[in-house]
Image (tube, rainbow, N blue to C red; front, side, top):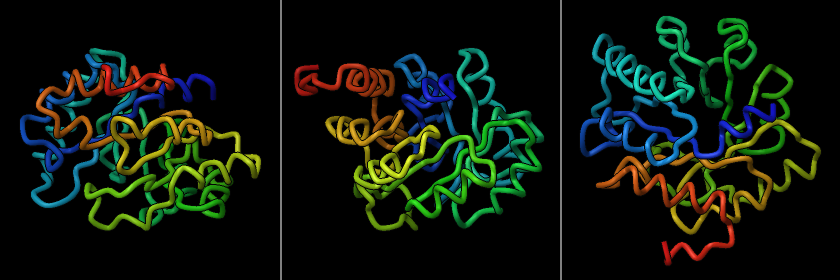
Length: 220
């Protein structure tokens, strides 16, 4: 569990619809900037399908493997198993947690939860970590739920949850500290890195903010 908490520190989520340039280039830069875990999420307008999706997944997976960064697949359990991913992340509208756990065995399983009830259920059924959000307003996910805010993570911790938690949704520079102080082990970001013209620098700034929470980010 402690190892997973460290891995979740700066969690990058991305697919081709989230990028203005080659996703491979974006991922290489992001990892160079300090990303500790990557989730391939190929969804949204213009998302690749079939063999094109699989090829991109394998290309990004190879980049992760070359840099010892765990590679997680969003939702597509069959693809994750086929290419030998390190884990899967699912939402509340995806396959039941218990069924996914049975399919993937000991691979990492992350589950999105929007309240304490969903989190407790996910843990009971085999989740390794919980993704809580959205923390702030976000345009990345078209079907995003209402903003939960960092207080939802605090509520989960106060209820006794010890499983690793990562905050997600609208997180960017200057917005990390409340999420970590609420009890999150890390933050998951999409456009803060994927839409940057320099993803390495963007990741570096977020990484510094994570490790130095009292830092004035405007001075970086």
